[in-house]
Image (cartoon, rainbow, N blue to C red; front, top):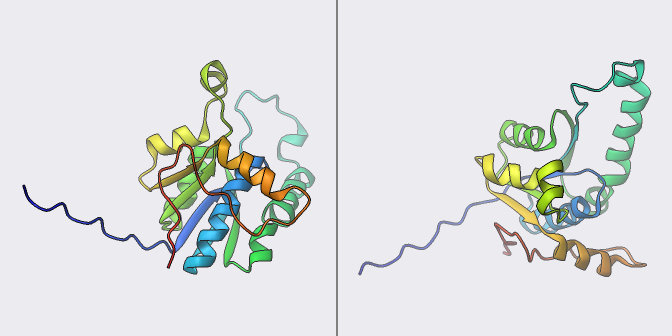
Length: 181
């Protein structure tokens, strides 16, 4: 038998992370921050804004105040760990379904990796509500790291009453691992 070639190291310089304010997206962000700090990578935080086609048309559908409020929360609250860590980053609010918006931004920014959290839905709930992480894994041309519920629970335990400096390590549903230099 021939020798098995060693996998090539893929440099990670651009990371896209999906944020929606949930514990699972916060855990994904913490992981991305940890990797970005170690590698000197740039992080693009993405929040998707999707208004269903069957939503009743009202003046609030495209209300500027509503969008400004969401944008402020996204940039000033959800992205705060990026600022605290001193990581190079950009924040993008993208229109459309979450998985499509995240993939589109990742492709446009020539990302090396997409990082998202997984809520842990299964069965009927996942069938009815769908899964952003599942859709990304199935359709993305880029590597996708999914942090499962165990990583989120570890993040919650680590952050009780203190600022979290460490990121949770992915344990479930992982398609990549942190690279250390």
